[in-house]
Length: 345
Image 1 (cartoon, rainbow, N blue to C red):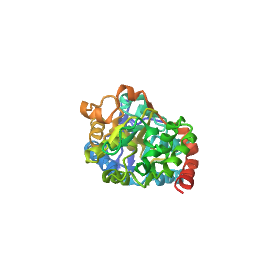
Image 2 (image 1 turned 120 degrees about the vertical axis):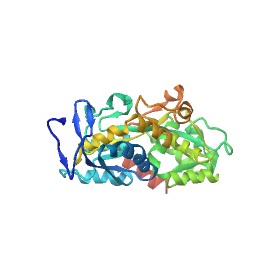
Image 3 (image 1 turned 90 degrees about the vertical axis):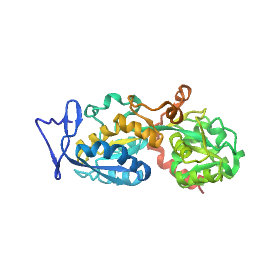
Image 4 (image 1 turned 180 degrees about the vertical axis):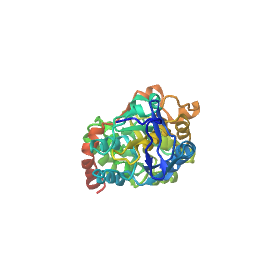
């Protein structure tokens, strides 16, 4: 992949000039249109608030969001693979989806020399086909008014809790991984956890379609415990929902949200500029405050009281478990089929 030089070359995109790249990394000098695929809701709003408006737009970039859930956006990338130019430059995905799109041959292998902020990226957040933007871990949530603090996933889905257990439909992968860890399995072998989930279901565990529906059930005390990203738990605490969090003793599966660049992106210069902007110290710190997720760069400063709420102790960090992304990509269809045909039946 060649690098652009301001003094040698300046490509045009549409009505504006795209960013020029020098040996030091991305330095936007002109204007260009950058199309960003992302989920909607708070995340899209905060991308605008913390990255696009304060960093990219003053540099002259015209940012357009293509909002949808990840499944149709992934399908569109695959459908457009034979086009010389796709319709989206950079896509927001989980680390599992970044791996999947790389294996599908539609995501660009990241050229870290094109990122001015590459040196500050936490090593675990440097992926072959994407870069981590924010991360958290799957923890147990519980209402201390209704149940005693569980030690981990096994206690959280114990059938004795009956219909006070809540699961989230759209998080089937992580629910199955958590149950596997509770049953002595691994992130690369979810089979041991299936019977634990079925036992909880037979005891009356409730299933909610979305994160928001689960939060409403916690708020109304319809349920007393379940599992969720610690970051989301902090958001709910801020909203007055009566939840506390526990880093499970069986291990804390990591959730990483990041960005991949389409292999046929019409504006790769803009895509790298967007990726660099998301890694800026100011943007990373703002996301920690606004969304409760941990920064993926080493130079972000998070206030000690906030760090204690959104982060993990030294002992808890030792229990952080990254996922087996190759396993998930290979087994996802089978996992979804079991979830829909067996667990939800």
